[in-house]
Length: 201
Image (tube, rainbow, N blue to C red):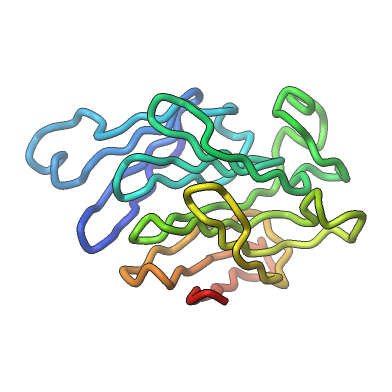
């Protein structure tokens, strides 16, 4: 089990816990009242440690898993709503994988760098820090980008380079649905914070 993460919005606060086979979301107000039952559970598409920092929507109807090779958005029953493949975080790996099984246990994929994702306060967009290129980009150099995706279908709405060399990252929520922060850990090179605003561009 990983260290619990707190996700905050004006109307709800969650403690999110990643286990090997699932993601649990606990409502903090319910925890304080003595109810320790998860408010939602989401089956995981790959083991913990094989991906980055995941996110749960404030409505508890969607979880987005940040993996080495893709983003997966699932509901509480585990049904896949959408998937966005990206360049692999494994090093050195220049592949676009279709599944975790393709690289499970292979050197360079056991302790990868990783990205992260966050869901806006109103649940309309998913923000994701990924390694690029994306498969439709063609053969380009490896880079890191911050994507804004439609939470309903995973369509990429916007993207921007982060100019980072990431060991790991996490998203910082904001009560304004159009704003999200991204904290990037670069080891001894620093930990820059990016702040994004989405208003259609």
